[in-house]
Image (tube, one colour):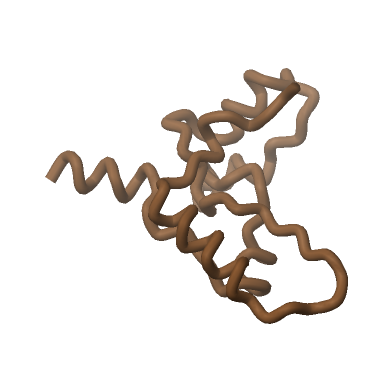
Length: 101
């Protein structure tokens, strides 16, 4: 089995908040699938570099080559915000700043 591994981590407090919102959300007909991840990758390596390492040079990493997307998650979080109003608040970048303060 394959998974994204380290780049998709989320701290427990954020995960609990997300699961709580999902359980308490009003029922709607149909199935909703959202990516429960942070907008920023948890990797210390830029996302494009990580994806090329896994898949080689044949993968299009142009989105991640832009400076504003350098550490963007490989998963979209738009539906997570739209459906549940959730955005992870504790990313690796924020936690690293706290630890070094």
